[in-house]
Image: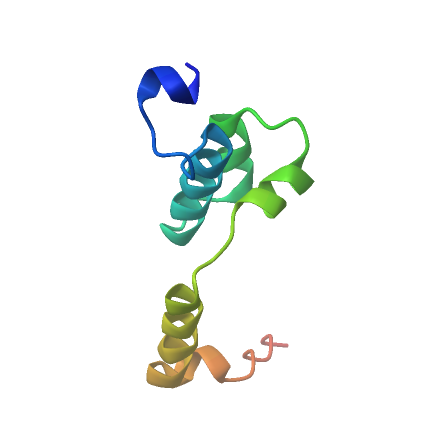
Length: 80
């Protein structure tokens, strides 16, 4: 559907909607390969270009590391 027929504001284009779609999926924890399938991108590099993480999402990821000290602990040594 063309933007004129959908009566979208001029700054909301199908291109912008694809960015939003991919970004929200990525921030919801959906893996890039699944996003690629859903968005019908041929190349995973296009998914990486479209799926942008918000600053708030990145900040929350860093906060999670701070709250969960076990994430930063070294790996356990294998039993001999």
